[in-house]
Length: 375
Image (cartoon, rainbow, N blue to C red; front, top):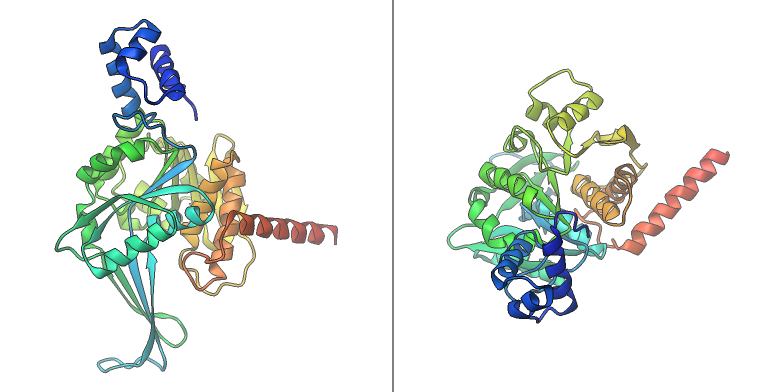
């Protein structure tokens, strides 16, 4: 963790607390030759910046990611025979859990990253089941807020016999309450993270407030656009966003400029203030744009079964690799691999996923590529 945003006295106070988390303010003041009021002010500042949690000086753990945004119950109904309108149709059904932020969170948890979730759930059976699933994965659910009388977000997909979508139904009204009050209540855990990932399901006020508060915190902030309408909830200037994920349609919707090449779109987003940009291009892969320029990371060949969750897997793989110290380009290549692996699974998150599974898959791809190059 970097402590470059700390002044000399703040750093000294933090060092004393790290050595003895149970030390009192008077003892800190005596040890450092400072007034107690000065120590108290520094402790408040350390809390706001995420270096300590609460009055007990609990120190945050390393490499934690907080995921903020959509947590959804997905229901898929697959027709047994061609759909006939205006009558009953036999189907097979399956329930799973989705939402961009939730999917990213589960991917990271399966990769062994300490994660926490900030979202809204209804006080209903679906919400309780979703929260229990997160806890079973080892995800911290302290940031989950519950809404009495509101339904947990739900997406229903009716698929024809060829798996084409006949109708999709989305009940996402609960996220209209994902506002600054939720952000403030969860802020201590958010501020203590290494990375914060947020999708664009929260309100525009929430996203504006989060990007503004990022400047006084130590975490790095990644945001995913989710959709062309929702990307427009982002501020006009993107300072405060360290890493922005979006596709070409979302980039055009945000920039309001048509006929841009993907490379020019990525550069325009950097000019708006984003620290780095990952612009996904479907079967072509993704562009990684930052200090090293704009680099194409090609998609990994695969045999898709279901593309649901592939974009979320790309985000999770990228963040996982960045946490390990990789460059953006290397991280996006890892994300592209995890996206490909996810499309070969029927689930939105690959159920065999682990850090070891990803490493083996990476080795297999590298060996196949090397063999192809030799031939």
